[in-house]
Length: 139
Length: 149
Image (cartoon, rainbow over all chains, first blue to last red; front, side, top):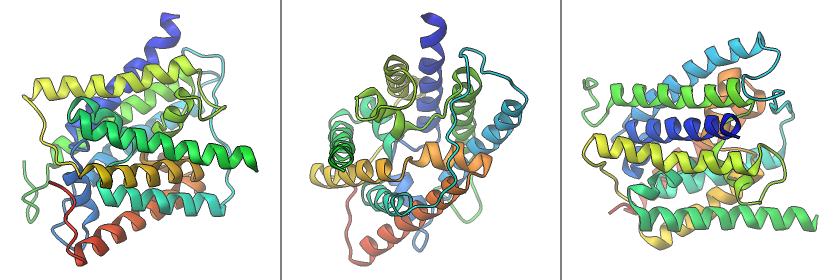
């Protein structure tokens, strides 16, 4: 039980700490990065760069492993098809991200920084996910 | 340390934060064998997705996010943050929720986990949401829309 539940808790904790340290829980910093044609703030590029660098190394380790340390098998997406929902959904996400300067991780992490504002965002986020869920069930 | 020409930027804090996020995603991958994609994990925890890690694991990850942020906020004596008005947050949240489910991921799953292994879908998704975000901010600025208080 502990062996199964501790890794995701520690992973989430490190993730939230990284978001906060990197300034990503401040929508002003995120929108500053997206403001490429204004007073551009490149901080988010350093956050992304640091995270991608560490993960690129992790993927190299992963290739040499038969199974993960605390689970029976790797469950990794293997799709490579480029679809309309992928591009259209990502565009909608990007518009929402630009409007308020929040994506899912920072929105949830910010529940302890600006609880009322973050909660509104998170509830709307889940409602949006619920809309897609209902569309998929109808289809 | 500041970046010449960008007085607002915090490159070292950004890099440090990015490394922590990378370590978090690496622990999820090498420890649990899964992708640390926050939108997918949030959908999984709340029963809005049938695939992915166990719901208890998903909840543990989600609880960890604010805990980790709280530790940094406490250690640094509080964090600055400017948020938009409730109506703006609600509209943005809806778009992010719909978009990340249709697009199968967000900044973490596509932007960090997928891009770092050069997944074709993740690279396309990341370029798309970056362009959409940059265009949105540019259009809002040109209209004089100030949303952050």
